[in-house]
Image 1: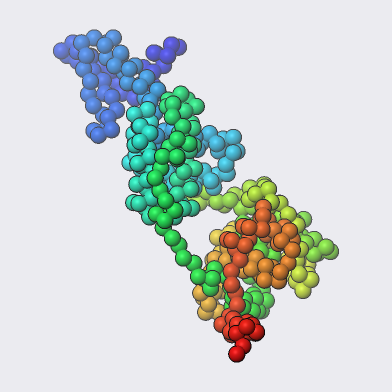
Image 2 (image 1 turned 135 degrees about the horizontal axis):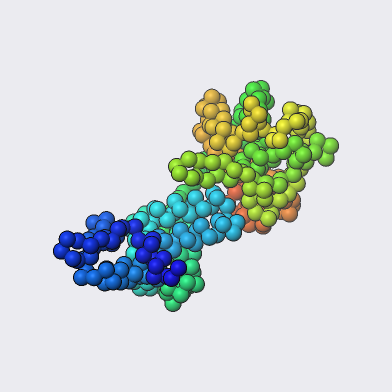
Length: 375
């Protein structure tokens, strides 16, 4: 089949001859949905169909390039389904209008102005802007590879006029980021006194600093009650298809550093033994009715507990920050800390995780103990 015939066969509208001897068809139209076309001969009407569809192939929209890039990376397992879904969400937020444009018709200046406007219109943080840059880089590199455009992403980014002060600042209080010295004993005691499978999952996060996605996919063979360690080998991922959320398993940890052995405090050897015993014969440690507990169910249990013991709701990630802060407050070796946490370097722990957990009385006592302030 020739390319011409293939395009005609894939044309979604019929071609017909009118009573007046003229030939007709419809072509897609962005404003009206479709538009009627008329020519004197069948050859002429086929020619405008070929011209139209050749133009679509050789001049795709930004949206078409994005989906091609995103789907291609997923097909090669370069990204997980969760990342594929997240990139789609970022695209919908920023590109809903601009993405309808044909990338061949866009100038570098227009793209630069588009990125600058997104920061202002959506009050982006530097982290949110980084996500926008990721998909923009993918779109432009894909378009250049297909030889649709000649300019580079690096040139666009260099011309973007955005200072650090223009990004939205999020101020997070330490007390909102971790479970402090007063809250931790309360929630730990509650978990021990009401120990069921979901509470055991929450308790395990407090004594290991594990990511909730790592806890949800633990298998019995990952638990070593003799050495009192837990092996991290995989993580749960979440993605959406057709409006439905799916919880899947990534056979690898979040990062290469996530692959690790966590040492458990000896005081909690009993918990590892109990979990090992109740998971015998099951694929996963945390299960109910022969089904794996997802991160959603564990997260909901944590929020419910916070309500019951009347402390502010904090996410599972705040447990992880609490664990990191405890290790750093104990002045442990930095190599040990990053091994326990699964970080690549201690800076991640120090800058993004370490928070002040001390209560008011302890802070006063520390200040009062400084000799230089004693008159």
